[in-house]
Length: 612
Image 1 (cartoon, rainbow, N blue to C red):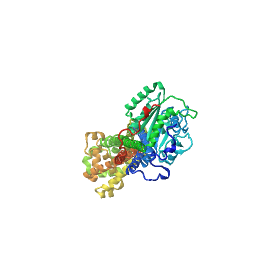
Image 2: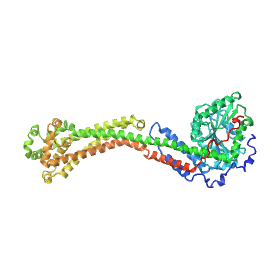
Image 3: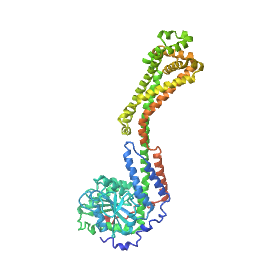
Image 4: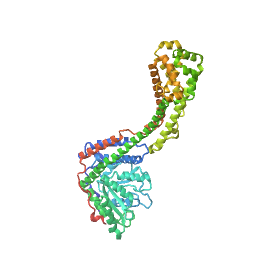
């Protein structure tokens, strides 16, 4: 190819404003905003801290967006901002079999990138530059995540560096993997490399120029303000005008009408696999002019850099929305659990109020403990002799007291097991109906903890001991406690426990009288005879509050089986705000930098419409 001329003629041309290598440590150009690198570093930290663990529709796209932003910051924005005068990087991208590698080889007049009929051909990217620019790319500021090598590699995580004297200084070509490669890693790498380009050179063919994948990426380029040039390859001469016109219309419809378009006809390749000079001459000459014009190259860099910076804000906003959605989802899941266990607590509270716990075994054992039904009927008339009757009953019959205590324990444990099972089922069902919750569930969560019965029994026994301590502490007549000793305290404690199972603090209602057959009246008489009316109310109230507190703690432990899962997955509540704040700092620094400042297209036009 003759369009590039003798590479020596470019050595002193204004194409290269600065060299890397020994001079790479010099200060960045003054027009790179002082606060912009710090703002970008802060944004990168905010993106790195963002987590999207819950299975939501927005989660996977957000993870990909976060990874893409991190790659672009590391691969392009930060290193390019640090050295605006570094060589212009042209990433050559396109569909499978579009002829990218053949075109790169032809432009640099050397077989630097493998080309062939087997697909995919380019497995690892190949970067070609003038020997004078090799230090900049070898040091790894650009695309730091790729391992540099000078040999071809099958590993997509490597970047093969090749020098070509025929390529003018100040310009580098990067032959990227196919954007529609059947190999996932190649396809992902192609997107990463395109995001690190100062200029995209898109290569397509007459047969595939309308494919969806290239246009998706071209729209992405437009959104980021990336400079783009197009090569329409392998065009039958008789259809060149028609196809070129159609492609131009498509570019214009996507606001890419200013992109230079080069049309390469169907042709042969020589023994080295290179296209004839006459085919590549217009494109080669175009790149030669770009390499020789430092001002234009700088304008291209600044346009692409500013476009990428401008695109950060809306992209990060979407990422912040996804982060907020994660927090909202964890809050919603937590609320479903808390609602289920609040319902369990309400059921317990209602059970203590509506008299249901006075039915059956508890009522029978209470009646047996205090006396016969005749005793209940005559109790009010003989209130003065009640204390002696209670003492005698307790002194002579310890077994009924133990049976009553056991009945109370059994009734409460049954209630707790029932409400815990219902709450677990409700919480499980609530999560199962939520996409994020379903992914966090395990089968055992549908039921209470395996040790719940033992914990419930221990809770009731501890509460019963607490009631006895309360009787001792709250007894208005301490001489009574001393005189009647432990059995009186036990008897009084049992009466307090019975009192806890009523709603009205001994103001009997029809329900309670029917349920307890006078039980509440008897309990009231027993306690008032010993403590007095107000003390009775205080004892019952404090014992009820203590029982509900203990049950609340037990149910909280049960709920924590669910809540621990969301706690592990929960992102920081301020993640979205931190992302928006960091993006705002970048936007402010970008405006202060004034990187763009070049209205309209900055790329030179294609000669004669790019026709060979």
